[in-house]
Length: 248
Image (tube, rainbow, N blue to C red; front, side):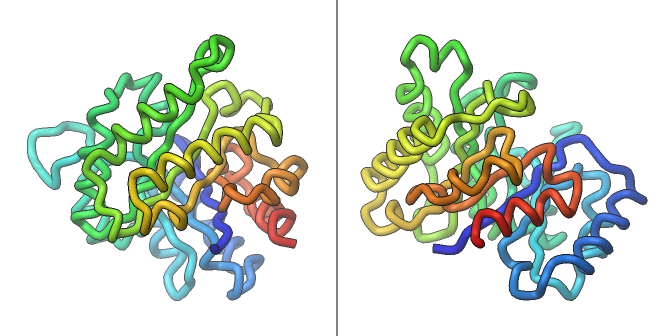
């Protein structure tokens, strides 16, 4: 299975900064490495990134979408438009969408279906809060979020899963090797329960304060197939170091 490094910029970077990032990325990333990367820019600078990555194998994706292609949904992103612009992926259920913007679990399954219908690969994010972990609810939360998010999935089409413990996002904290292994193994078991054909090969990413200094050990885990990187994706060198430390 390939190893992936996906960079979520969140609400960062201007149009000019996006263009500069794309130029630097093209200069520093080898052709043989390009297909491992996907960048998730803010929607308003996506076009600049698309232009900057022309003639490369670097992918880009949406940070969020709605589950309708068009309509009276002010402020939302259309799966159909993401597809038309050439997005390869779209995040679904990122912890900030769940906990800051209070998106309910039932949205996620609808978004996964809408994206697959448009030919965009969903990256379904799941993860527990610190209270969930303290009270032993991690597996219950992960199971609920995963099954809800994949309730309408078509396993004949690509889908990714990303585990991001909420307590380790942007905090500098990182889950231990043992904690990540336990959750990723649990996710794999559920995926295999849902689909014997696709469950064993569905990529599972880890996200939670991933940096070049802590990625190598995590990357060796059997069920870690890549990383969903937040703050460290804002600098090309940092993101590239994560990839090379992981596969080297």
